[in-house]
Length: 163
Ligand SMILES: [Cu+2]
Ligand SMILES: [Zn+2]
Image (cartoon, rainbow, N blue to C red; front, side, top):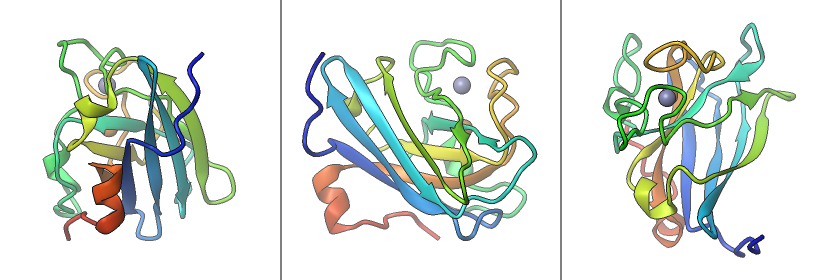
């Protein structure tokens, strides 16, 4: 097993849209040998029926808030460079479990490298992910978003999301 690097290689600062105005946090990406450790730490999650919230890397590169009816329109579909079906998309991740008003998860994936996803977006959805429904797991509306930035440039401009 490889040792976890001291600093993430990339970070996304997550901010909620109109459906989750208090939602904020980070997703950190550590290159870990041939896999990537994805560490998500959020506060201010709204409540939903299941307590699970879908989490994906989307192919688009902007967290433009869009409209109430179509939030975060520029995030596009799940990151899917190999033409797979959900939940075999490279950007598919396990859903988050709400605890208190936040969520924390750490998951290892070998479906992408950190370099592959820099400039793309992390999206949190209002529902869980059924890991079945096409094309996006029945995850419901997009409630929060963060652009994946190289760690050093992210530190100098932590909130590059656009309103
Ligand atoms: Cu998604
Ligand atoms: Zn997917």
